[in-house]
Image (cartoon, rainbow, N blue to C red; front, side):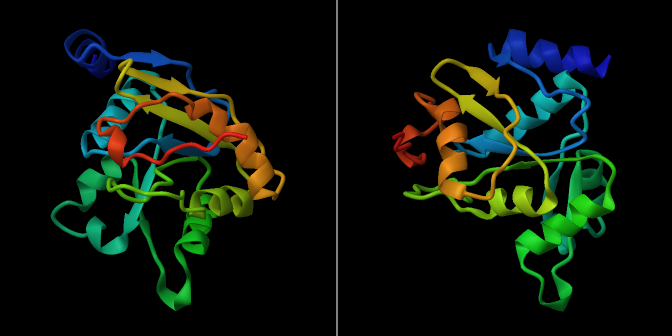
Amino acid sequence: MRKRIYQFIFFRILGWKLIGTIDGTIKKCVLMVIPHTCNFDFFLGLFCRGIIGLEMNFVGKKELFKFPFGWYFRSIGGAPLDRTGGKNNVDATVDVFNSREVFRLAIAPEGTRKKVTELRTGFYFIAYKANVPIVPVAFDYAKKEVRIGEPVSLSGNYNEDMKIILPHFAGVKGKYPERQFQLQLQ
């Protein structure tokens, strides 16, 4: 019943399309979501999660998962990040991957909703260290489409792997295109 409500709102009321899906046999991956220019992107992700019907996750500092909101964040796929012991975000997130049987991490490599000229690389190194594929996910507000690409296994060479991944985002427009990362395809 909940899935039908998500579908009705996403497809009928909001007028969006969902192109592609995530193979349910892929239990762990990094969902690379671009562009991220507004807060509504989070809700688009929740709608897609509800429609696809697979567990999808995000991470946040562990303080967010305390009373009174902790139960809610966990219920929508959140995982607390424990950076004690001098761990950086990449290593702490890899620990979460290693502690779970299913973990599909949605992450926005732009790292902010403000204008950026470079992607942060943490998403790549999380996937590489956790030995999981990256699945590109484009939020195209101009066409009202969420496009899910094919999983990409990583070689360890960031620049070469990005030549495979980034074309998925060609021509995509965020809610505020002036804020989004501008692709430089070679």
